[in-house]
Image 1 (cartoon, rainbow, N blue to C red):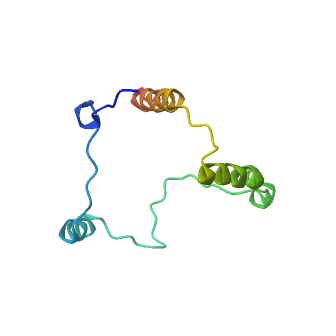
Image 2: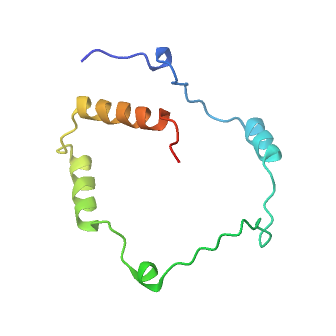
Amino acid sequence: MPSVELSKLPGINPVRALATGDHAQIEARAPTANPGKAPVAGISVEVSAAADAATPPVDAERVQEIRNALRDGSYPLVPAKIADAMIAAQVSLSLPDRN
């Protein structure tokens, strides 16, 4: 499988670690939160007791099986499927919002 130079792909930016100064600047520019003073938009949301008490739709047993397979190298990773999923995600994120 040929290697791909990610920095040459459009929309792909190299990842870099934040220096301490960069992190401080980002925090300084971030708006401060004001707990309890959220803006009111005239919409109220309530969580029903059934939804609150429902178990998450995660099969913990299956998750553990996958983790074990990844750990011991027996999980089948197919680069073409991974690439297809990444391209599909990019396309879906690039589509204009239809709401």
